[in-house]
Image (cartoon, rainbow, N blue to C red):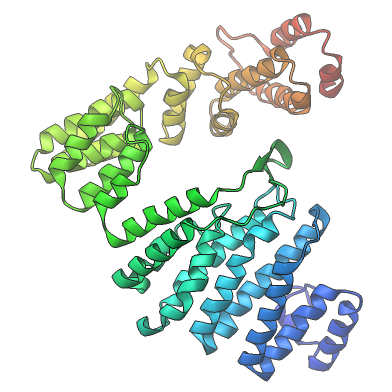
Length: 474
């Protein structure tokens, strides 16, 4: 039975409405954000139209604000934005879907201004706006097709303010609702806007970052997209929504790029233009095409009634890329029992691959941990330190049953930090060394691998001047 002192709905409800009201008044004293939220909730009780009006006023105030918000104020701002979005998507949308669409367009339209005056190293606010974009498309489906036109101007402005990708994919999601005529109207409006000069922005570049385990690994700035780029991306989405493959292809600038080529080929395949798929791939792709391109080519061969050629394509593609998805596609098309032998052969092939990183990733994620462990012990030199996340994943998977292989990978990480004199990573390297020692206690036979004592002695001899590291490792 849960404690009556736990903060949950049932226990708080037992306090009674009067006591809860007193507590809310008490905690909201001096807290402007909480007071605003309570007023909005009261407005929702009085009238959904009053609530929509109050939300609009607050959105306009947030849009017009100029104050720079640091990391201390970010949490409160995000909480308020999330609360506003939730009220629009529930209370307002339930009463008037058209009003909710209009408010969400206003909400998304202020994204640029907000993103440029906050320090959003975790992209928390950007993610919130992207969620609002998804919500907009969902609510718009409830608005009758005859009522689309009043929203077109606001939709154009929202799309033109897509400086950081907050509304990427919105046109595609709105395509069924906008319809063919609506999409053409939207395209004309965007092309008309392209001829007008964009308002220059004096805002600083948006600060971003990449984090792992509570540590900031990188800090960067997200540059504002130019107006021409925003419109170009929007036209690509419109072509997609219209199912106009030729227009989509014409808007691509890098046909020889593997990812772009895969996007083109997938659309041609969906349109049933099978010969065009093969012609496009054969015209542009490199000698070692991507796994995705290979998959599309194989599916096209299947559709053309050439299953044997499709299977050969998948197997050859797997041998070139060690892509797990290609291997699964190949195996599931084999007769029963043949797939078991083929799987063993394919995984053995990976274990002898010259590409250590791809081989390790495949064997760990498949999973084939026995092969992965043997690979690490015999081919550790072929594994690079380019993907530390992969090595940490492998260590976590191997440690319970194959501690020696996990120790070898931990030592690679420690050596990499010390050899490259990455002082900012000394703390992590010390943790890796400690974990290596802990795992070594479970190993009875090191075979040809150094014992922990021998490794530690050699490490100290080679890097004895790394005093800061040895203090952390003590």
